[in-house]
Image 1 (cartoon, helix red, strand yellow):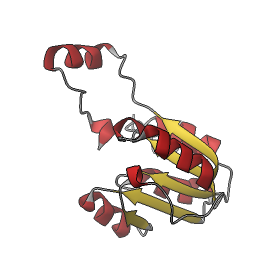
Image 2 (cartoon, rainbow, N blue to C red; image 1 turned 120 degrees about the vertical axis):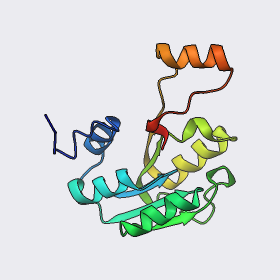
Image 3 (cartoon, one colour; image 1 turned 30 degrees about the horizontal axis):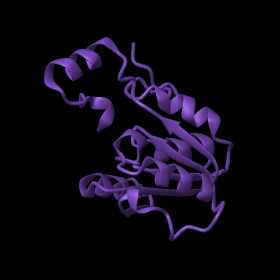
Image 4 (cartoon, helix red, strand yellow; image 1 turned 90 degrees about the vertical axis):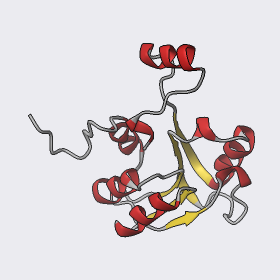
Length: 146
């Protein structure tokens, strides 16, 4: 059975949880927004009108722009100095926080810029992820990180 409900996304199941946390018509800054799928969902399903993404991968930025999303090329480890305090209702770090080099700076800046911060982390305790870490000595890369 194919599920056409965008809030019940089977590829990224956390999207429905995040979308449920965001108030309708809120403003959102997505740090490490990837291809912009979450931003597009928030725009469509939650009526979010002020959307902004920051992404380091150029190809992902092109995909965001193709979806009509505003995205800046940047490294979130550098901070968010160009944003004023509390300039967004929500700052989202979904599947990106574990990749930053300065988590204290990124989290502090996120809390300064957003009224609320949503952080989504991968489950590295999952058995196949633990096996991959033990056998190969590196963190697994899965489809959910794309």
